[in-house]
Image (cartoon, rainbow, N blue to C red; front, side, top):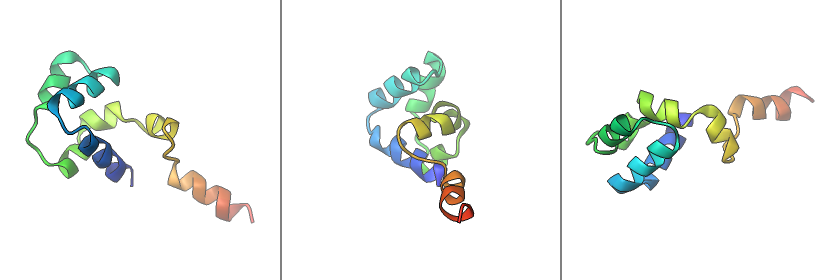
Length: 80
């Protein structure tokens, strides 16, 4: 599911300039951010790349409201 969320976020950054700006904001070096912002690879393939795994970390996804599924499952089912 995290890969799908990363794909969705990458797809929201439609323009190269938006991808570049957001990758830099998330801590990726300028050269690598420009290289990956200009990629022609598809959304699903990029979602599994190291660049999005490093920039859109699990902690970042949790901070913007995407909770960890396993933790949510434990709260709902294992406490009964």
